[in-house]
Length: 139
Image 1 (cartoon, rainbow, N blue to C red):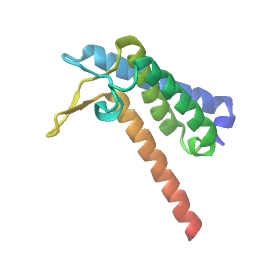
Image 2 (image 1 turned 30 degrees about the horizontal axis):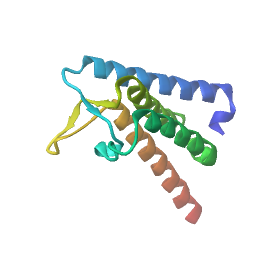
Image 3 (image 1 turned 180 degrees about the vertical axis):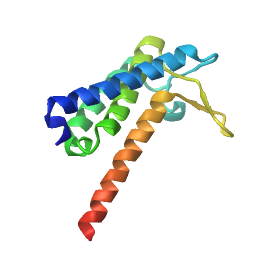
Image 4 (image 1 turned 180 degrees about the horizontal axis):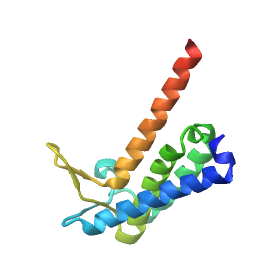
């Protein structure tokens, strides 16, 4: 198991730190940012406060970590990408009242940020590893 060793934990911590720093620095360097007060695509902004979203997200992350611990063991990098992106977005909610988005998705008018991409790629990587493991088990 990757996270049973000190090296595994340090590796995840390094990836998490790199994602948080890269995301936060990219937002400071952006010429224009928008504040997304809701969850994905601005949904539910009128129903919940930023503090509730931030603490709810932390709670969900803890539950995900405990319940799906075997899943997180599949890749140190993917785990670090997911948790780093989530932590950086929680920081934005607490400090700025919403997530700062600055990357424009071409042809959509939608905005996101480096943390969103880290979350997406981390989950996609873990899903790919899970499907590959399942396929090996069926052979």
